Amino acid sequence: MSLLTTAAALSAILAHASPSLEDYLQTSLKDVTFTAKKVKAVQKELVKINDDFGMTYKFDRIKFFYKEPLKLRLEATVEDNSGLFVVNGAMQTIKIPRLRIGTKQNLTDSPGRRQTPLDFGVLTPSMFKELFTAKFVRTDRATGDQVFDITYQNQVDTSRHRIWVDPERGITNKREWYNQRGRQLATFNYARPEKVNSVWIPTEVQVRNADNVVAGITRYETFLVNSGLSDSLFAIN
Image (cartoon, rainbow, N blue to C red; front, side):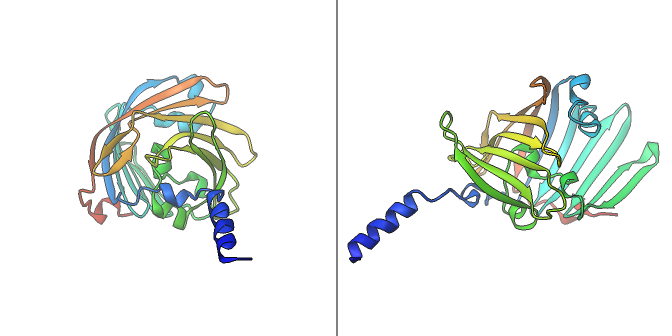
């Protein structure tokens, strides 16, 4: 085979190579702070997803703090009760002082219960280094989005997500969530993307249950990106 023929063959292979999710990760994101505001919540439709998911929509506003790698802090108030939820790697703590609730859990063997930036439509390097594996499925002909199946590296948990990724912005436009029995629990549609300090972030998410009924809508606002959040915010005590 001539050098020219070999080069042409390699070019053809590369042209048809499957996209890699690594091409769409938000590598510039070091940390982010924002507020989630509840726009719509229909509890009878939310509980069809699961009971825990319905509880998240009890809060009108939640303050989010996220820092790579996989550190998350949520502060919320409902009915005069303040709540704190912290994730640091596989460790999770929940505190509601007035109700004397204080729990700490290691979710190494239950990765499907962990909260990540995937929940608000953002893909970061640490997610696919420590937690998820991505497999290319297809290019969506209607939207041009790249479709990937997301599974857990810990194969004990067989729940999964299918995501539609905007190839230009590197954000998730749509996500389908499946439980360990393969039943679809919910569909998330992410919208109104904004670019903040070179990082693209969706600012609205709509969730539909398995009956394709809109169960909730949340808007994200007041973004602060790469402000240098302290690790002490994410301490598990």
